[in-house]
Amino acid sequence: MAHFDVFNGDADGICALHQLRLARPREATLITGAKRDIALVGRVPARPGDSLTVLDISFDVNRAALTALLAKGIEVEYFDHHHAGDLPICTNLVAHIDTTAQVCTSVLVDRHLAGRYRAWAIAAAWGDNLPDTARALVQQAGLDAAQAGQLRELGESINYNAYGDCVEDLVIAPLDLYAALKPYASPFDFIAAEPIVGQLARCRRDDLELAQAIAPLIALQYGSVCVLPDEPWARRVRGVFANVLANEEPSRAHAVLSVNPDGNYAVSVRAPLAQPRGADELCRAFPGGNGRVSAAGIDCLDSKRLDAFVAAFARVFGRSKPVSA
Image (tube, rainbow, N blue to C red; front, side, top):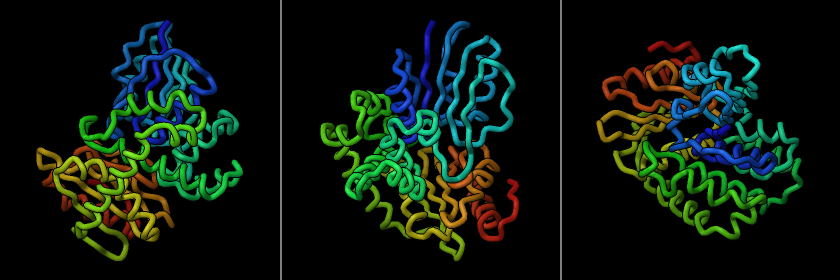
């Protein structure tokens, strides 16, 4: 009987799986990809008697593939914080899903493990731009300011690495990054021993400098929309730049778009940190959109619908009305 671990390639997905496998080691086939590569369950070649663990990808996006696997009697354990929709009622599904704004998948795993590997959950919370959650966990773990700073740098750097429209855009493939950190029970040992951590941090800072030099397409009282060029650095930094803007201006919403080679856009949206709601509503109104209430995205926004997206952004964050596209 085979087991499969299916996980998002960002900080949250990687740190969630790492915590779980530190506590419950097992041989598994790993399936992951770039951050936006979330329709992963369809790649699982599971047969009756097999099992899988899924972390940090939307149940709703993977519903058809999951339904087929569950119908075969395959055991599925699911940890996630994205929009899920209605869950099937069956004995071979164990779901740990919480879509509230201040939770990420690594926090759900941390709860499940009673804080056994909490430092990795703290790094993931920073990477997912949940500063209040990260600080609360830092306090519970009794870490000092220097240690908290190290975990923040680690989480933000791992998360930065996951952005890009394909693995080729990334500094290191998520599977290789997970393999690099897998031997380390402590993130502090990983930081001290592995040069990839410093490399990711340097690349993140360099890409942010390029993004910060570009003026917003639209800057209004309630939010901003920024368009980055068709470059690998722009695709890598899109989500991290959106997080930076959200932290700098917590009362405003932000959308960061990067131009795809086909002329369409990939989109990252951040709701105001002071009122984390509406990002998933906005993005799910467009094909390929998904996410959570505070942070969401659209895989491929048709360039002809840019004006419609800006208008919807205004309706959600400017006047707090429902959006339809």
